[in-house]
Amino acid sequence: MKKVKQVKGFVIAEDKEKRLHIFSKDEWSYGAGFRYAEWDADNMQEAIDFIESY
Image 1 (cartoon, rainbow, N blue to C red):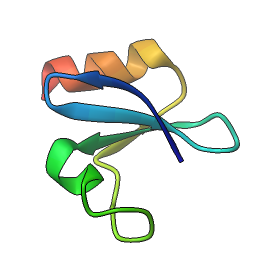
Image 2 (image 1 turned 60 degrees about the horizontal axis):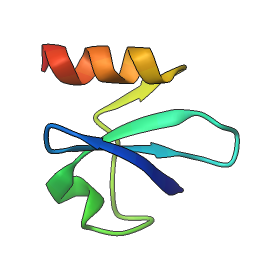
Image 3 (image 1 turned 135 degrees about the horizontal axis):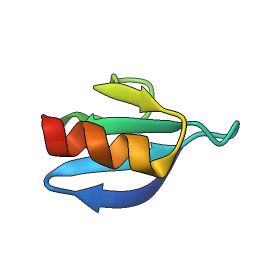
Image 4 (image 1 turned 90 degrees about the vertical axis):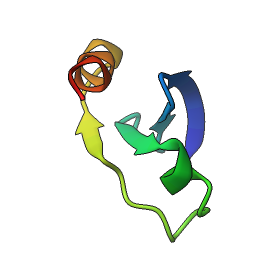
């Protein structure tokens, strides 16, 4: 999973299938295999909207 963007303390990451996953900054620091996404999004606008509404 690759970190794409960071917004308001959340990390937006993209997997191999080009899906976006939103993690809290703390959750992202746990490392691959140990972190769980707060939300999954189909596009960047959906991810940002989720973060703005959090």
